[in-house]
Image (cartoon, rainbow, N blue to C red; front, side):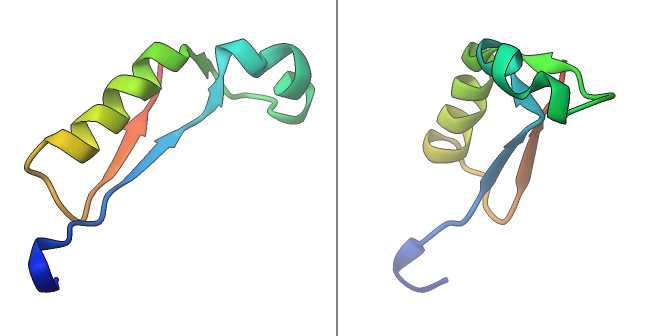
Length: 58
C-alpha cells in the first residue's frame, strides 16, 4: 500500500458484555471478553502485521 498504509481487521464473535442483548441472535457462538478484543485491536494497530484478519475466539 502507498505511504506505508496497513490494513488489518479484528473479528470477534460476540462480546461477553453484550451477550444479554445479542446472545439470542448468536446461537452456537461463544462470547469473548472485550479485553481480548482490545488486545487484538492493539496488535493490529501497533504490531507489524498487515493484510490480516485477527480472529478473537474464546
